Length: 288
Ligand SMILES: Nc1ncnc2c1ncn2[C@@H]1O[C@H](COP(=O)(O)OP(=O)(O)OP(=O)(O)O)[C@@H](O)[C@H]1O
Image 1 (cartoon, rainbow, N blue to C red):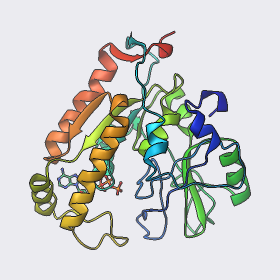
Image 2 (image 1 turned 180 degrees about the vertical axis):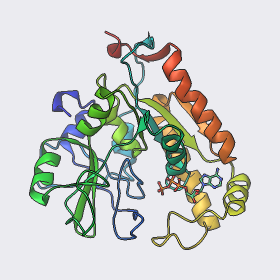
Image 3 (image 1 turned 135 degrees about the vertical axis):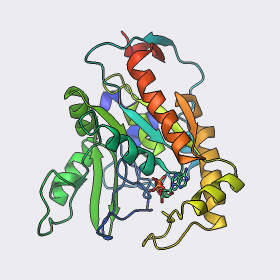
């Protein structure tokens, strides 16, 4: 990601760090950002070195980003245009589940990025399969250079998603499926990437509770994924969804309410088909 493309003055001045994380199947890693972000961390190119700001709950930071008007134009589908699909929404709403289903629908067409980590490779792991393994120094250097759309630290190791990995999937002709933290949208929403942004919205409390309990869904707020969601967590998902919608709603191309999972997935499949077949409104700068 080039510094000149970062859409926000605030982002150029701050490095963003969040603290919540999630585990992978081995139960020990964090996969912030595009993989499974319980850890809402985002990155940008900082002007000031060695300073980290937790802006996850900073309303002022977010409000600086609210646009008033934006010139738009229709982007016509054409061969070679592969717009990534970015699923944004509150932690726990089901973005990973929807992403997993889409990737499984056509693994030759839909791909997601492989995150980078500074953690040591474990026996049996292959570089470039689950992760790209790099040294902490190299990763810090790349973070400083603004190469990560989001990154975070978990148990002393850095994890992150590079903008280059998104661009290389696009250039290789894949439909890149991302579930970035909402603050990463600031770095993704650029002409080189042209994401189609879908907000995954929780349904109202009763429906949220009924559908998740009915499916024996495991709470993503629990490190061990060993229990269901609590009422408090359902309220948190709804509250967090409202906040994201308030702050970033002007960037959403579409909203899907994730009540019944199959219905939400069908809507997602239709949305992805639409991106490939219909002219859609985008910032005018993307079509020039
Ligand atoms: N519509 C739904 N009905 C029932 N269960 C669902 C639905 N959507 C997701 N789930 C289940 O809820 C749980 C959490 O979903 P998922 O892991 O996709 O959340 P997430 O938004 O990616 O959360 P996080 O960002 O915190 O990792 C999973 O067990 C998933 O199968």
